[in-house]
Amino acid sequence: MHIDTYTFRARLVPVFIVLLPIGLAFFAFFPLTSIVSALVGLFGTLSVQSLLTLLFSEIGRDLGKKKEPELYESWGGMPTDFTLSYQSALDRPTVERYKNKLRGLLPDIVFPTAEQEAKDPKAARDIYRSCTNFMREKTRDITKYALLFKENVSYGFRRNLWGMKPAGIVLALIGLVACATSLAAFPKSEYEMVVAWACLAINAILLTWWVFRINRSWIKVAGDEYAKQLFAACETL
Image (cartoon, rainbow, N blue to C red):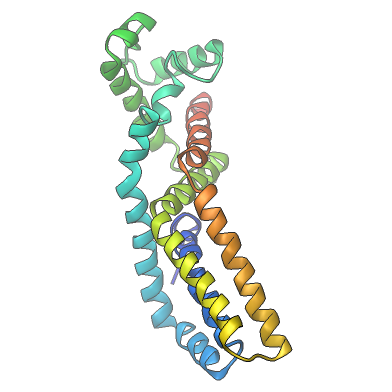
């Protein structure tokens, strides 16, 4: 089953990260047993791979998309809403150069003045979003706009992880407890102890990462970079 780069990195990988603690807990109890071998064989079949790929890619996308409006509300709008605005993090000469190029590409576009933007931010945002939509359609070639595509994948990955944060925390906590139980309640060989401790440590790291790293600010960094690269592409159109 062919999986494109965006689907794999932005949709599937976040789901695999969420489910990783359960796999680690399983290995803590049954390191390299016949049960593990059987499961690997099962999930290695083409039909199961295809079904899981389809399911996981949709889960990864839907949970991130569902919570995206919450992100935009907390930021005051989409990152692309600000790139051409008078609140842009870019210097004014660069913003004006982008606007001049867009005026040539979109003769009907009329950008608001600073006063007009302050007076009616919604109308200004609609104009900027129209430019965003135009640029998005003009930059579909992921080979020509490789850096832009890379930033889009990074944003999708972070957004989808954040969308699954509650599940990630719960499963990491369950995995941590399961690994600790495996160490405390079941006799093990030296090798099995090493495996169980390694699984416990990874689950602890994952739990810490979910709690402290996966947040709106982390996503916004990627969103801002995507917005910059999107409008920078107008100079090559």
